[in-house]
Length: 109
Image (tube, rainbow, N blue to C red):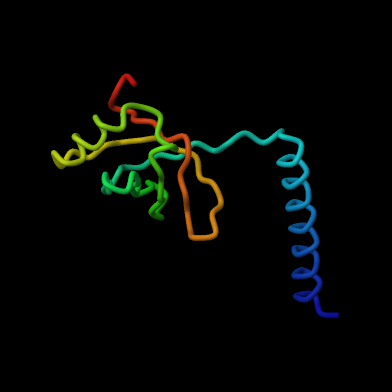
């Protein structure tokens, strides 16, 4: 076995252990949710959902039920063209990145 192959095998084994440990923590509820930041790009008020452009790159879908605050104020502010900064948590979804626990950072509610 070449040195390069041994290094790859070692790194793969170490990665498997790290993933296993993270899964264990997640299953035991010991991992907290990671709060991300972004800006609401647009809202489809007739369908009660919108999209957030994450500061980390991807765009996240969110539903009205995932928003903590006054939905009507959010819709009005988006219609005015305001950039609305938010914090949110990333959750897995079969259709792509999804945000939950969306909170405005420019508003007291």
